[in-house]
Length: 324
Image 1 (cartoon, rainbow, N blue to C red):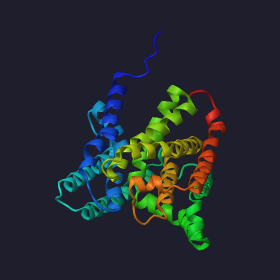
Image 2 (cartoon, rainbow, N blue to C red; image 1 turned 135 degrees about the vertical axis):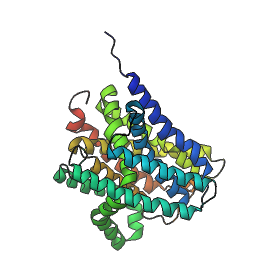
Image 3 (tube, rainbow, N blue to C red; image 1 turned 135 degrees about the horizontal axis):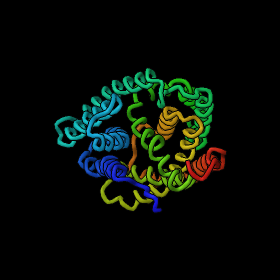
Image 4 (cartoon, rainbow, N blue to C red; image 1 turned 30 degrees about the vertical axis):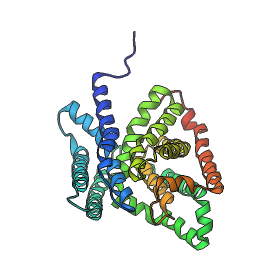
């Protein structure tokens, strides 16, 4: 008897997810031209909402109703952030005003999201398997410093200590209370939903590797957004340079999720990773500058971090059975 991988409902959800998470960035981001760091912040914040909303919209279409407060919160976040993007594209508001509006709304929605999940104490409870989660978090903070070592050496011991303390003590508050609506918007989709489906189809290791590839390709509209015209070849080079690191992140995040079943741990280490990448850059540079400024030392330390994270493919979580 032939096995049906995808039902009609599954196909509707997949098409909806792809259209929202991958289609909308290509449609809207080219319309947004903002100078400086806001050229990255505004589209990046918007993109992070889309993966989870794409999943929720698929469910809304199939069930023909908005089911529960979680559906409502991401529907509100999508409507509000899309409206800000459109107003910014139409030059009705400035980039600074758009960024301020997104910041205020993200804090309000993040607090509601966090408190709601704490009250529910169900599958998405933030403090699930807390002892393991803390250990994994500290482990990832250490790994993040490996790829950041050239900048840490340049900054000096005092700045390094300050950065590590900030990651361990203050970053969780900022990520959970101010930015969780964004990072949860990615992690609920990538780890909470897509990882399990890909692993069921392709096996645990190949599934998570495919997820890493998809995850990096999803970022591409953002690289075109912050690049100068005519830098298409450099963007392709940037994606190829980033791909091993993003796959390694997918492996580590996937292991952390399978180890604890705590999506909030993935939210936290995702936030710390993003902070570590930009911690020593006060201004966003162009794609060309980014590609050309990678030194041999930078490349070596990033490769070491990649290897360390890829080694988690050989942990028991990835060996337990061929499928999830």
